[in-house]
Image (cartoon, rainbow, N blue to C red):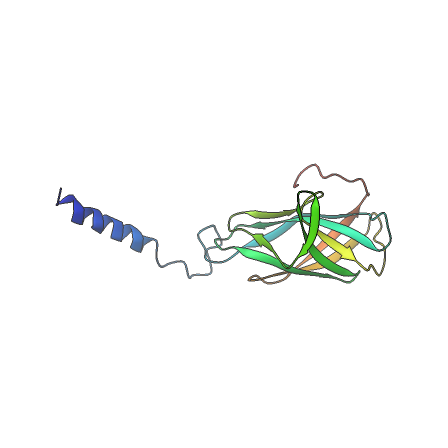
Length: 157
């Protein structure tokens, strides 16, 4: 029994060391890297019913090995805030987490972007440009198509 103890420790030590190092080369953008690797898809805005508010939806996918957070959004059409929806009640939040190897889904009935104090009412067929800001990653500019007010995506949400 005593002989397996040092052998087990040597194997455990080798495995622990194998997990160290090599992660600092910026070329690894897979789940083993130490930074977020973000992409944005499924973005859209339903044409607003009123002239002063609109909602926006999208998915941020993180293929990297580190968490990140959506911390802010700007647009030339008005003020944009980030909202979390819990049990049907929405409230403005400072950020939403994007887990490593996961995604942040902003969708109708859930977490979403809220466009307020609109300078112009987005109309079906137009696009709205937004800049997404993150805690650790570079900003991403997204062109969000304006869809019919009753639009329901078939995929992505």
